[in-house]
Amino acid sequence: MQIMKQRYTPALQMGTLCLLAIFGFGSRTFAANVVRGVALKYRHVSVNTYMVIVDIYGNCGSTSYAEVLSTATPEICIYNDTSYLTSINLTLAPPQILEYGCASGADSTNCMNTAMPYPGIMKYEYTGIVTLPSPGSHYWRFIFTGNLVSGTATRLNSLTNIAATTSTIGLVDTLDNTWHDNTSPNLTAEPQIEYCVGIPDSFDPAPVDPDGDSLAFALVDGTNGTGVCPTASVPDTVAYLSGYSHIYPLETAGFGFIGSNGIMDFLPTIVQNAMVKYNIREYRNDTFMGTSQREYNFLVTSACSPVCMDTLPLRVVSPQVAEQPLAIFPNPAYTNFSITTSEAGRHTATVTDMLGTVVARAVFEGRLEISTAGWSRGVYAVHTQEGAGKGWVTRLVVE
Image 1: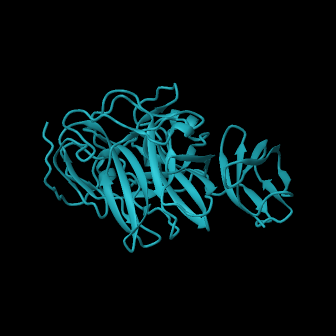
Image 2 (image 1 turned 135 degrees about the vertical axis):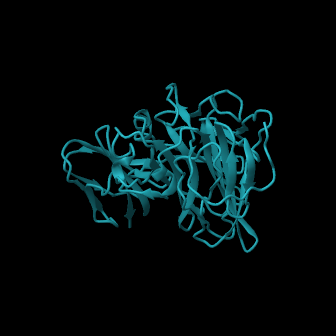
Image 3 (image 1 turned 45 degrees about the horizontal axis):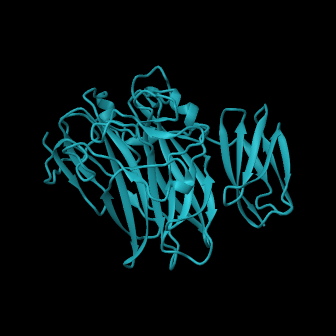
């Protein structure tokens, strides 16, 4: 095995390595290519209120990912240093389809046409609101322990750079809101579909920070989530196989990493399935603001895709649900609000406050009216589900 530590700088091209965070859920055993990535980040809403976000990328070529990801409500544990504060469950926004486009059009991948052999990605984004107590703290932590409620996010034992034991994926973000508010950087480049053995390539996350903070990227150890919030404070690190580490996770003829922007350059030499994890630190005028994390499994394959999928950039096509077929009025609400849907059938509406506590739940057809009497002023999440199928999330403000 040869892992070269000098920087390798190829021309930036789209190649054929799959970014796969491949893991099973709960007691289920999924085939490879079920999930391609996972990210944990947060966004400042107002004062001490933050939106926590988990992105999971599912492979369109598998049907089993949808069973879990479409009904998942990932749990996030909130800590002040090692002191457990609370937990919130995130709700699903409409998924987006990501794919490389061939000349034949948007139906060239199995996202749009399951009969097509070419891979595509479905991005699932889950969000939830939390209000942190005052005063601010240097040590806030948002922890994803792998608990999806509908299952558990566990890695497969087929990874080639860590010990062949199943583990639960864990991610930890931090926040220092003592002096300033903060929003995680937006990595505007979605996970690429494929790379290939023997082709020099790069991955550029294309970070943009909404606060203008300075960013410092690092490759860090993977961590194992506990799946239980009160015991989530100190996650265990994974065990790497001989010759691999978090700094050199791939077997390549050259490997380079730029700490200011997270760009990785590499020339993979063998078929492999390697776990890679980012940690991003933010600084504002030399003041530390917080961190966010993303984890992928890089699947290097010799089964290269058609030329059209190697040369065109990744694009976002129409969301699976382009528009929510429901309306909430009035918003902001004062004494009551109504939910109206244009779709036939029974729907379940669940309203949660900023801590994830359910304040209202009802089953309805067509129209539902909910009283806000006794509710505190603030932001609420309205999650509406069509039977056991599609779901939508809308933010509601109560004055």
